[in-house]
Image (cartoon, rainbow, N blue to C red; front, side, top):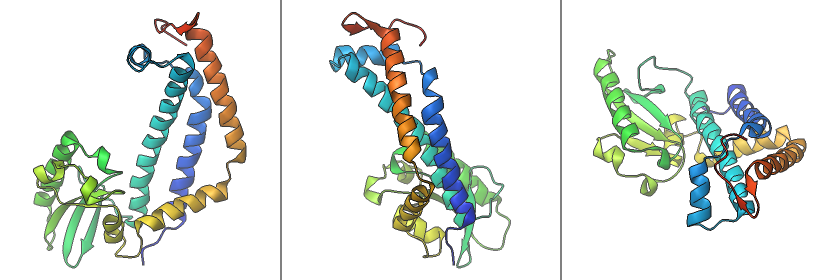
Length: 229
């Protein structure tokens, strides 16, 4: 029976700790994109306060989303502990006499044309090199979303895929679903406790906002020509 265990918990804990560290320590090194600043002020009409809030929120989102993407890939691998050693494949799985070489992506939006082309080439090559007695198949695994949300690129490259609930059930032989994975991460996060972190992140955000204003505010508007923070 496949289930989340100690290794799975370690993956989540380490990811959340990394998010904590990055969110409170690296923000002081933030160097805003001046071209983005121009677009926010001249195209969207953001005032200085709103523009800086957008910059800070965007930075947090990019860092968190990237970390969670890696976490989901590693979490899947804890249900399938065997690596492949084959270029382009994260894990392999044998089901009813068939071997699947699987590349894991976090969500539908991460699967673009270049990624599908590269994954398809590597996975089909891995299948051709497969020397076992069982037939081998390539498979793209997408950790969340639905088939309706996946863009046409996998089909364009004849790349089979499973997404969301069907993918989690497939790699766990029916034992773990998407909701199980979500609840597992939620339980680990609750056990860790983030009361002090919420205070620290509020202080960090305030400091970053003040630094940005001190550096880029010129009169009633922001001067994006500054090179460093």
